[in-house]
Amino acid sequence: MPEVTETKLDDWREQLGPMLAGLQDFVVGPDKPLDHSVESLRDLEHTLLAETPVGHPPREGLAVAAGGYLGEALLTIGGGAWTWDPDSDLPVAGLGVGETAEPMRLVLDALVERTGRVWSAEYERIRALAAARRTEDPCWEPRRTDRPALHTETSDAASTDPWLTQWLTVRARAFPEWSAATGRADELDFSPESLLTLEQVVRRRIPNKDALRGPVDDDFVQGAIWYIGEIARRHRDAHWRYHPNRTGTSKNPYAGRPFVQQDRGGNDAIPLLELQAAVLSDEPGVLLDRFEVFD
Image (cartoon, rainbow, N blue to C red; front, side, top):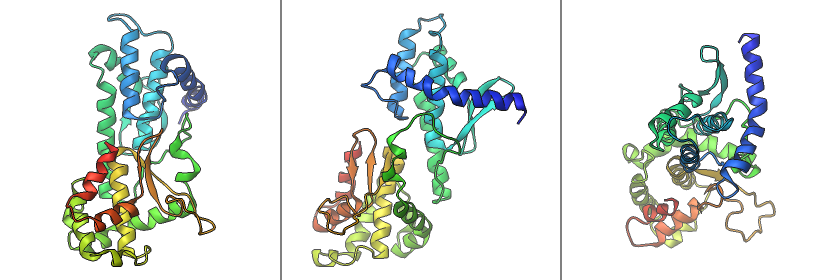
């Protein structure tokens, strides 16, 4: 990368954090956190349109800050890093899904089209590409290769626990063999509807309450726990969490069990308990019904 371009990129990265903090404090407000969600992008796009009359330029600095946040949100779900485009002389997001997003162009598109849906459509497109990439390679994750400009709850200690990191890696690699062993691999496609198939498999393997008392480190059970959590992660913006049970005596149901949680006070679920509910109930569709808590 030429020295001038690298300097511009370094300057952009240095100013992005304070700029987004100002966007949060003076434009968005404390009630609508910049949490990289599609909802936050919809809100910000509507704010930009409301403050920018047709045919007028946006308030000084607002378009750049909005583009910076849009790029951060796309990098969160698509992985990758900021880079600098010498042709446009603007920062762009080089995404881990294999595409480059141009946030400043998308800001202009939003002002021209004025539908309020430009940024969310791009977000959903990148999210779909990430989902397809995970299907091809279960071990792939949308990892940032530079430092995010804003701290979010997705980067806290609960999601980076060494045990959880190792467990997720093992389960992702074991999935092809695990799904093949169920005899229903073609149906276990990580769609929410595939929870119906998983429920049938679970009830066949764990037919009653007594069988449920078996060791939870059984490979089949661990694979089912991971599969349930992955569906919430891929389709409902949930994230894996883990709190160690260091003494082995904690009464907290979350301690020592991997679970999934949406950020900023969203819903959560302990997949092991979801499995137990499926075994103990006689009603079909329990797993899918309980999954709807993430809607």
